[in-house]
Image 1 (cartoon, rainbow, N blue to C red):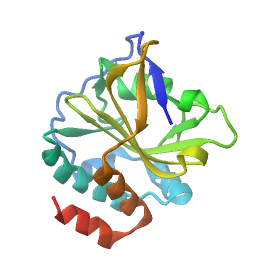
Image 2 (image 1 turned 90 degrees about the vertical axis):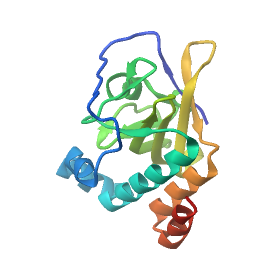
Image 3 (image 1 turned 180 degrees about the vertical axis):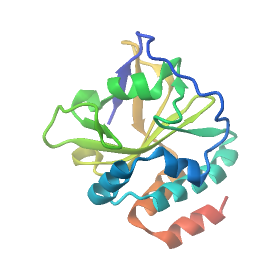
Image 4 (image 1 turned 120 degrees about the horizontal axis):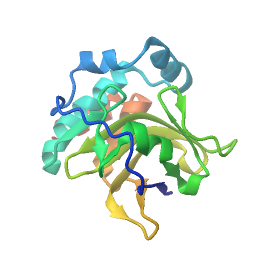
Length: 191
């Protein structure tokens, strides 16, 4: 389960230096259009309430990791390894060697397979940098998954994405996605 994208071209860079902390719930709500919210809820069951729960967990979890995370979106563009996540990374990402269709909100970035899909709900980036895609997939990526990339490049200059090894982050996202509030609260209280 590998996602990769080529990093040899440096264009379309955006930096939003104003956001140095996680956004508020109101800022998250304002970052979505009504059609994006309807699309994500009607097709995947993802809602602003779930987005807020993820934000709340990230706020608690990041300090235990000794890191600081920021939300990445079209409204809060960030750079990963000098490349704009929204303008370059998303359009050039490849899941599992390119055989998986990639979506963010209601945008389609690739359509390579009638069976394999990965819908990204949220993207978080740390200063170290670590980049996380939170989403739901089909086939080999079935169900809710947290995909992770750091700055290690393969021999072709691609950044490697794989399911995170952080069990708490994965569990928190799965509890949120499936609506297991009791397990989510228990995990959240452990931080």
